[in-house]
Length: 191
Figure 1: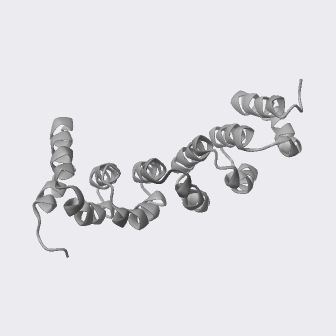
Figure 2: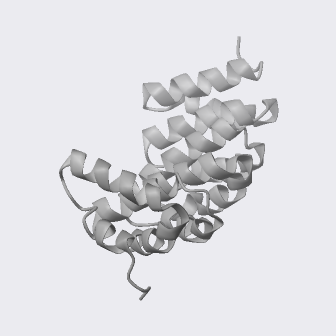
């Protein structure tokens, strides 16, 4: 256990359901800056969802490399809110450098976090994600996931993927069909 610091007592209150209390606590913890980082990292592993999620969001605002490895682990957390917050924090702080770790985490995280990672990779223009996105598309049992993957592939991929997207024109979900059509039009494979 880390020696006591005022941050520790504040973090214990992050589970508060009162938005004004959690906002006040977040501001106070941010005021401690790098001194609060070890306590916030410890809170990432707390079983209470509000505490770990709020800790991730606070850490994201502190420029300190110590939270990188714990946040990479948090992307794969069972709690999708924590995973989502961690993925956003990594992309916001590290930009393109976060692409490879996010790609590696993609098959190992909650489906809701997968959607966030796919969107982040698309925003980052991470063309290196295409092989993993293709693999995820082949395994996707959710129409929402298939549509998100096709949208990202449409932006990051190229016309060589036309044969991959074409079968999705017959998907049972209209959003998936729309994304497949958009891919093919963008790649010049459909008029």
